[in-house]
Length: 276
Length: 283
Image (cartoon, rainbow over all chains, first blue to last red; front, top):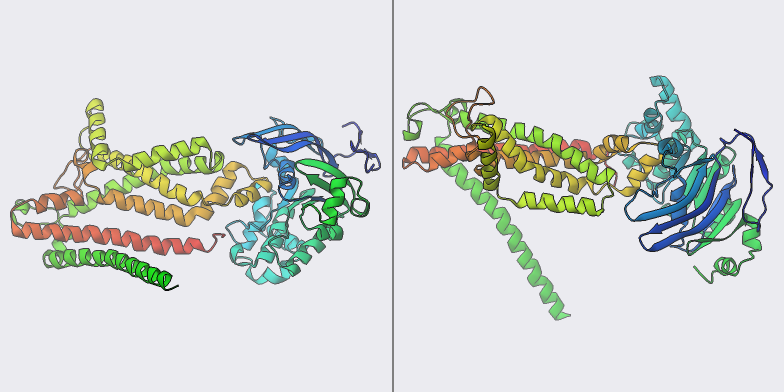
């Protein structure tokens, strides 16, 4: 593959043009993305490149299209769905996930997803972690699989709490533990990117703190994109912020610039709490 | 305030009466079958086929009908299961749950569900005359399968439809295909409902008389092949009850008791089996 210069289309926050020689490091870039649900124009001409190995927070009032944008990244919003129309591209490591011949499952595997509330699979804690490796047939012996399960449970700081009951149903865990289980499960397919759709909104403060801490640790290795409606959360964890309003990206840039020195009127109003 | 209080009291009383009546009617039905059936219940009833002159009050039993009913309903349930599961997974995993296609299919199934079983019997009979199939276990099994497929699909569908979209998304986002999601996640989540649907359909198949009257026929022998005509318990009850002889009528109640016990065993079995699968269910 030829080296390629990634050009950030928006000049508000010029990032260092980055010379990329390996493209497999979890880059997402969106080109002219438009999404319609029936008559509703939900995403309007989105162009953005997500910085790698950083935490990017997508903020904005409810209904502004944050979650839709996030779900486009791994094609959970799909043009095949009834009533959905979609134009433009979402490039994951330079492959268009909406291309008709895209290997969607392989591209999705590059992204772990944490949803608003945790959805453990209807099986044991152990099988939840092993699910991904099994379907992708990372060939493993029993002991290797056990090590793998332990590794990812430790990675999500859940091992100590569940090591004695790996084979009990995941549904018996507390909701905070379930969200960490979902994180571990996502990491077990060896993704490059972690997507979080308000991943702490259903959790108590302590569990939320756990997840936020994890994200900060994990950004060393992963590109992380988090949708959040909690401005303080964005302040705590984000390196880069995208502000959306009514289906458009209004402004994006390094977190401190957007939070301290927003340029657009709508961003200023949102951050001050005038619009929400 | 006083008026609302009275309203509430009245409504509670109405609800209690309605509930009581329903429970009571079950008790009355069971009691009358037990009272009338138990005296003529005998070991011979469940282990012997009708002897010569059985319907005149001579010896024998209804083993032919017990075995026939179990064969018919069992075979039909197996066929229905392999027809229903793909439909349910297609509607809920491969198509959007709320698509026009899915709701149209559901409407069709509801209409099919509403068609009286005698119509299925007549329909199957007309097909049989065209293709030259005689009344037999085979024809009966297919007719009963036809009758219970819509029931099984809708019963499974009601449960599988409640699978949260978030759970499907979670599976997809791990890189699972729709097939893997359907068979490794959706079926696991819906297992209690699937088992219930199978057993409800079996119960319906075992108890239906009208659909098998023209298609399975009736026979005093336990069927030895798929092409034999076969007796069923509901028809056995009908024939015994329509004789003028008192003892034979009593045996009809004993047969009804046997049928009720089979159905009761199925219901209790459902409870027992689904409990085992409930533990993994999320939400």
